[in-house]
Amino acid sequence: MGRTSAPLLALAALAALALASGGCSRGAVKADNGNETSQNAAASGSAPAAAPAAPALPEGGDARTYFEHGMAAYRENRDDVAVAAFRRATELDPAWAEAHYRLGLALSATGSDEDAEKSFKAAVENFEKLLDDEPKNSEALFLLGLAYGKLGEYEKAAKALKESVKNAPEEDDDKYYELGLAHYKLAEYKESVTALNKALEINPDMFPATDALERAKSGLQRREEFIKRQEQLLKQQKEPRGRRRDDADDDEGRNSNGANPAPRPPAPAATPAG
Image (cartoon, rainbow, N blue to C red; front, top):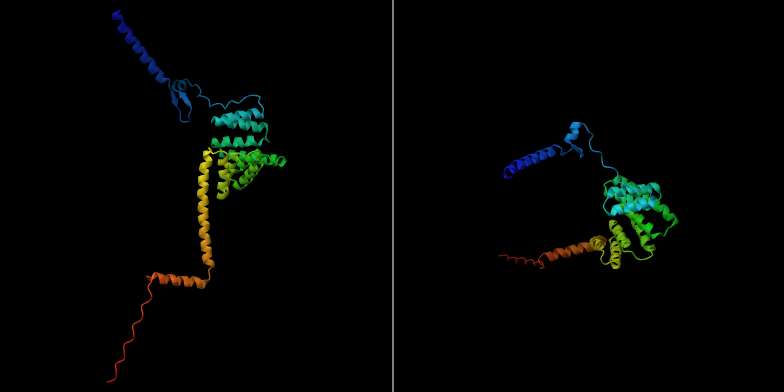
């Protein structure tokens, strides 16, 4: 028994080595285009692996079903799935403004900025139509303001967000926070500080509002210092010319060590004629 165990172990080792080398020859090779191909598959002429399938969506659902599916996917950072779901929701209900807005957010997350802009514009158009019938709809005004903000139209964003705050059934920290950001974008620092203070009054733990408030206060301080300097320059320009000259003369006198000019020595006495 002891003499047969060594040959068996040697055979087993050789078999394992053969399997290992065979496995390496069938290993996948990464192609330049990102697809995986097999050396054996290439030798046999078989086709390369197919491209990834489109995100799976529920079948037979309505717009609400796809919208909720998109919301769940977006929260889980599955942005491609969110795009497909929100897009399907807008196809089934083209007038659904929020679905267009959420589609824009998902597209932005995937880097599709041009398509995202189109979705935000569609959201604005449909929110405006909704507000024609419901002008005091606070949530529609809020999302309209956000959509305008995504398009860089901050004046319209601030206007919509003001109306949203005004018509909200109860005070909402998010609404005041977004209003504060819109004012900040417009360099309206005083209004921004007011809105952000209100957001923190409602929710003291809203840390993004704390950071934004510090930036707004800094901007307000810079603005006030600039205005003060401009007022001083304007005041100097309005002073009478003679007064400015007198002041300059006074300054020149003070700069000469504060001393009065020395008296001129008396003229020497005339020598009597001899």
